[in-house]
Image (tube, rainbow over all chains, first blue to last red; front, side, top):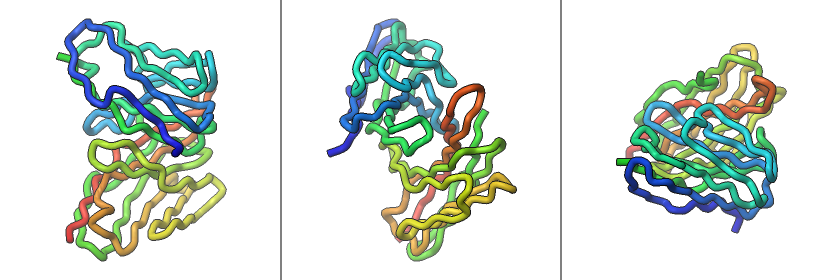
Length: 112
Length: 113
């Protein structure tokens, strides 16, 4: 089954404790991205990757890092999480940046 | 800044009625996409309409695009309780030197049995 998976689905952590949210897709997509969703703000892009070893900042990259060592995986790293990073995070993939996006199920992160 | 802005923010209708949601945007686009999101879940792609297309259908969904008015509408006919969800438009364009897909804040649709 074609899908995008994220782990964990729910995470409660404390300020400053490094964490990684994994994202994996099995559709051989070149383009992957991370979004955060906050009430009333829609989805805002954090980082995106056009292909392996090619990543770039989206609209709200501060406080986040990503890597793309393999085509299928695109982890999101929060080196020192803060409460303002409490949000619902989505990973998405597509054949190309302007094509239809396939979304993962989301990761609800709470930073205390 | 947001490219696509949906209207209304919330819509409440009875089963069997039609639901219309609108999306306005500011700059030229390559295509416009509509997505559905059930509460707390990932977005699901519904329809993509290209800038040179005016109308597209998919089952009970009808999407129109008016590039002169920079607006799009999503019509759901004969709505069902299962259509209750948030609906987002996303504009795909070349902006600031790279391709960009920007989502609006969404329309929350409630369909009552």
